[in-house]
Image (tube, rainbow, N blue to C red; front, side, top):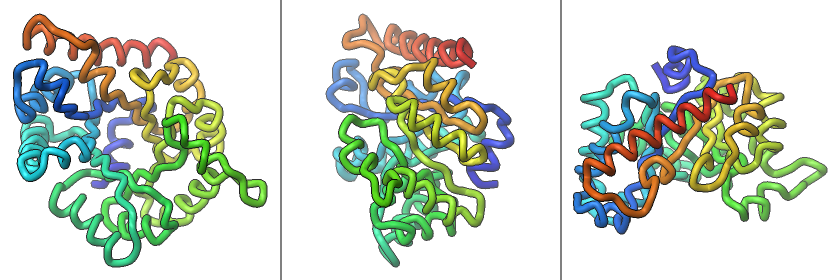
Length: 264
């Protein structure tokens, strides 16, 4: 069963995803360690979420120790909550045997259900992932400067639309999806209206300022993975105690869930 099959089994139009972004400076304020923090996030949110997205950069910046904690956290999640969809947010990209090596690492070693992929190299960077578990391809990202490239036009076609075309052409095994930011609801609506069957990972709700109402209305009609990372994991700057922090994280994911259902 690949990650798209898991989505279909859930049979939900909107799937809640907690992004695990272990920002060390914020974690240190809590008086706990990185591995314990990952467990806290998982245990405090598991009742209300169907997916987790691990941002590899924050683990990698802590060297070998950080990578060991990532491996341990993935094993903890799989052992205690085996039905969750696990996304590796690495945005890996290359060609040929290097792209194959990246896909082997993400799926054979880390054992993610699906990985994010940067499509800048074209289909050569996507196919090795599509031949294994699949991928979530960056299409229209949530950051402000995404317009600098993704909204350029070539022969009257936006770059993000060309990416979408490439993804559909590579989707022979029905295991590809795309990433579209909640901060661009017009593009999201345009993409969803012509790609009902393509799963979309939607970051940018919460800390980045994406609007729940416009995002829900724009993405209706297919499987959508709605992600919040810092908005759930670090809902405010200071906490009275670790138990207060756990409660705040739980309340944040519940609020996120309520916001989705309010406009669905």
